[in-house]
Image 1 (cartoon, rainbow, N blue to C red):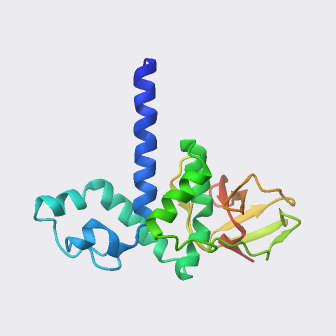
Image 2: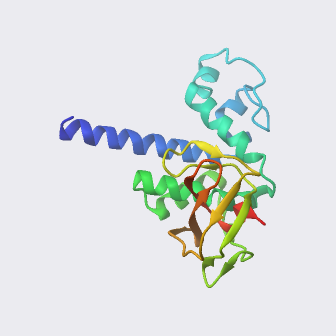
Length: 196
């Protein structure tokens, strides 16, 4: 692959990452699929797209993002559940090179500033920014840090061998890398993704 092809590939990746993120955080009622009657207010498909507008509002890309969005919406906590997205957003930032400010700008635009002040971190398992040693149960499904595939399911266990420092932050929320016990793989979590 030559330099030009490499740059085009990176631009395409960044474009899709931005589109993915923007669509992921856009309320159902503001999506074109909802406006065209293809999905309901919970993202459930109502009908097969039958017009050119509906077909462009519900492509394979939209279907993929909507399936992920419905999965994420099952997490408890209303808008504050976006705090549990911090690890996913951190992963997007790391893989795309997009700045945290750019990601926040996209989130703010999509949510009409509904995010303002809502990404909070509880301190249940944290002391002096370190995640405490122990075994924890996941509350939410989490993607593997290596592949970004959701394989660490809610109710499975993670292990923290020793007090660990955060590997990074997103919107002031600490991100920790822990071992997912069933797979032996590392995943990124926040302390809001776990319980004892």
